[in-house]
Image 1 (spheres, rainbow, N blue to C red):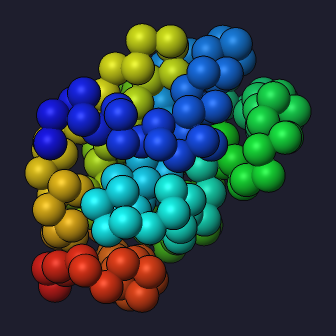
Image 2 (tube, rainbow, N blue to C red):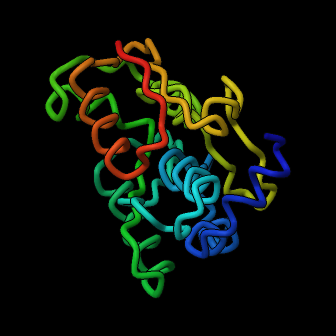
Length: 186
C-alpha cells in the first residue's frame, strides 16, 4: 500500500477527514491522529465494511512539555468543542505526560517520551504503529511501514511497555470485528 493509497482510504471515514481538516486549528504541538481510527478504517475498506465499523475512539497525540493535568485538560476540552458535531469519542493525550499515569493505569513502568511519535512506536502491534500529522501537511508516520495493515496481519511489537495479556485482549476484540485478520501469537 502506498502512502497516497493509505491517505485516500483513511479519508473515506468522514470522522477522519473532519479531524484531519479541523485539527490544525487547535495549534497542538507535534500533533497526530493515530492508531485505531486509521488502521481500522483501512481494514474496513479492505473488507468492504462501513468506514466507522468497530472504531471505539479517535486518538489524537500531541507533545507539550507542560505536563500539568490542567494544560492537557484544556486541550481535551478544546478538541471536544471542535469535534462535538461528529458524534464520536475523541481521546486527546499529551505524550509528555503519559509516564506520569501509565503505571497506575496499566501496572508497568513507562519511560518518559521526547515526542508524540515515540508514543506511536510503543503501540502493541506493528499494524497499529501509524499516525498522520495534524499540521495540515498530512505526513504519515509508520516506522514499520503499512504492509501489516494492508495484509490484515497483526504481529506483536516488542516495545518497552508490551504486556501479553493486553495484546491478547486487543487481538480478541479485533478478531471479533474483523475475522479476516491473521494474528501472530506472542
